[in-house]
Length: 223
Image 1 (tube, one colour):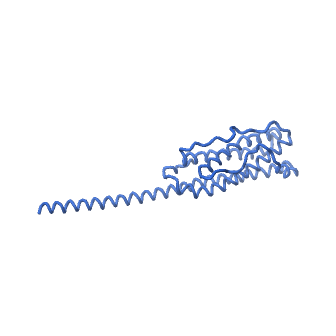
Image 2 (cartoon, one colour):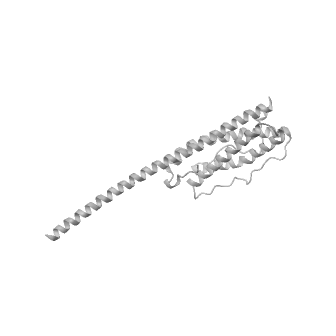
Image 3 (cartoon, rainbow, N blue to C red):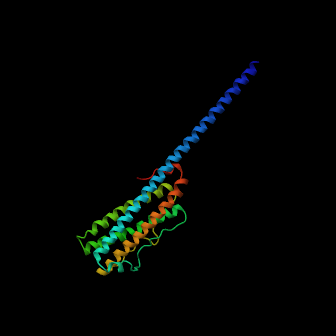
């Protein structure tokens, strides 16, 4: 009888332990889902902020181009559409999200020296021009966008190093006369605006692709 009672007690203990274990597992699963949902929301927020910044740089660049053309007169529309060798490609390449983000980062880096050259040339042409402040605004916001893209890439793809720009350091044009400088400046700015348009389009697509599949531990975005 005592043995039977002991077996019943043991069976009850096992059943209680199993019930408790199931309850704890359910709590763990629910907690994991809650954390994942929260971090997925954070991921979407940070990519949305990056998209917002890219749109802001696009807006400021568009405003700069309008002022640039106005300062150059009637010929501006014509030479802003000129074809110049050595201007970076505004397109973004790659199939996977890692490749697309890396391409965005690389393109922003490649354009940076050209934006600096435009500022330097404008300093020589018109040292007191209001365009200088507008160029500095675009350059500053572009640096912020580049930094943000860099951090997004390193968090999502920590085991994939960012590739260096193809062909090495950016090659800038040789010394130019005044007309060539004006053409170069406008072509750089209009091409850069095209890049920003492409970045905004990509960020909208990447938001739906990256946030849903990224590990929960990889959502602490740089702010």
